[in-house]
Image (cartoon, rainbow, N blue to C red; front, side, top):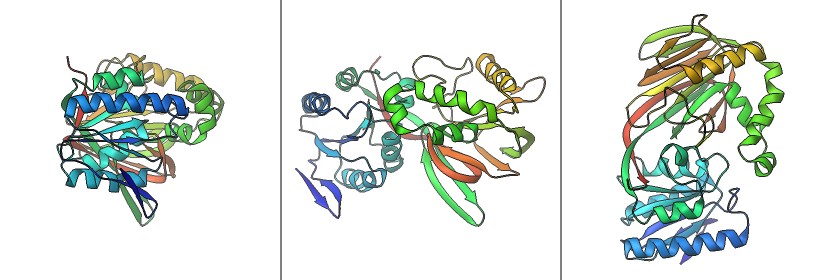
Length: 324
């Protein structure tokens, strides 16, 4: 049974049950009939797996997730299942970090990067079936600190964070466009943005080593693929290596941007390109200090403007992945 307390749904949990948090605004759960069928199957699979009926909570608010998960942790829930996109996954992961309680994913958003990287089926119904025998796997998380003037804010990330073009693209891609086109919405918006590329002088520090360069896009990644489930980097991001990957591309026009992207796609080693415009490094702590404020993003969500620092949290999260 779910109660509403101060506008936040609260769920009573039995000790052996799972908590299922559903984002009804996610692109694949908006249709009531689809959501009903998915929910029914989730209940059956988790009842068979846990020996206890799962508790369900619906919320599209990341802020509402924290009290739900906190209560679940206190009651000894067996797992927390996210039915939504990467934003829902991040909100739950932030509260489950270091608890050893595993997170399961039923991908229902636009990108679903985490599910794609970790081999979780793209079909929501197939992902539900995979939960029956899924096993926990330890993965790294990251902590991002955004500094703007004298103010600083901190957030957990699962995929990564970044400054520049990537953040601008995330902000410019509307929810309505993502609903209509899915992941292709980002490519459509990118075409209109590349005509206005700029490179900002940046001081980037990786574990104490300083890199001074001009950057159009700075990505700090824990995991991720260029096109989720379809196009990966030849030098992939490993969410279990205890390191963050730094990707920097400096470009002032579309052709330079294409060259930088091509370099990142085909490179198999760390370092810089011959012209120094494309860089790939790894470290445990990475700071980005632009001379002019750059737009920022954390796991695809806009995070204001300013400087950015990220640190790795090795093996901080248990994620349920399909049994091999």
